[in-house]
Length: 207
Image (cartoon, rainbow, N blue to C red):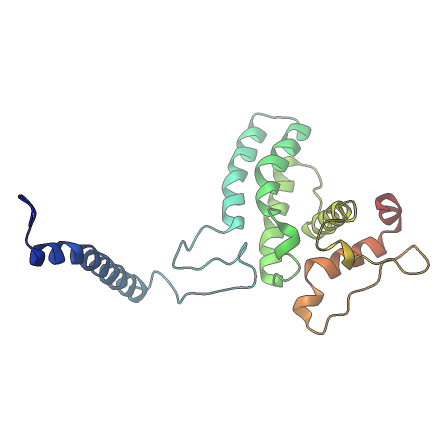
């Protein structure tokens, strides 16, 4: 044994201190969670197909995009008091509010429930009253985003989803993807193909 080196028993005790600390931290976290859940402030952990809208409540019960967007509406109201032009308010809405509502919209909006869509649409209606102009509905924004994203995939032959866009013999429409489940039917690729087939001018522009 080298001078100043602790005995083997002490070394084993020091090595086990890290594991004991982790175990103690886990026990404290578990006790805190049980206390928090039994106090009535939270609910059972909820998992949704739409993580952009419904997050696990044990993380933060009031951090959804609708709540964040409503906080940004404060700036629109303040600028309206100063009689700022609707054009400038529209620019602020696009950058501060709409960017939150439409973040990754092509991946979650199709499978979102009606309740969540109405909650987000109410934010848009409130912004319309603040801006004093008509704003595009969330469904139109989703359709336009699907068309834009599909156009990017069509221009990139190396994209894994490029082969899913197959033109029919007429050359005017894409082949619809067969889906047995409603979840797959409302996902991005089937919805993007339907959006391109429905809007014929947009289809001819992307080809």
